[in-house]
Image 1 (cartoon, rainbow, N blue to C red):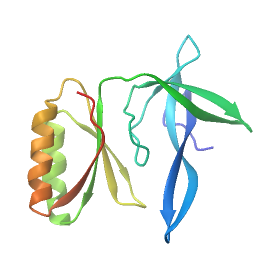
Image 2: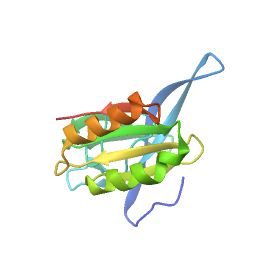
Image 3: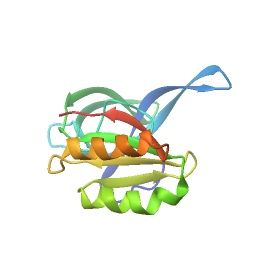
Image 4: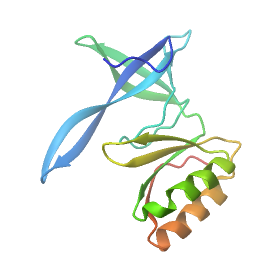
Length: 150
């Protein structure tokens, strides 16, 4: 178990299926969550690999072999998750600044060189998607619309 980024968070393991050299490999993506009064959990970070989930989604988890395992989505937060992998590294600084100006928050997964963006309800999702589409069409980055809610 990793150290939580802040006190009171729990590591919830989301099952994912990935391919490694053409063979399917099942493993887990750990996401941080806070426990709600009713025993559910609210996600506190943005997924890098699992799709269909976003920051602050309310989920249910069950304990198995000393680990909390994702069981089901209870209530989506309405936020969106979009992941970006850069093809043109000279575009990183400008794009990150632009996304920040549009109200998006980011996390970086260094091993896979992927940025996961949390797009809150206060951001203009259409403007974000349009902006990212232009960069993708120009070959600057690749976009994965992991959880586009609105």
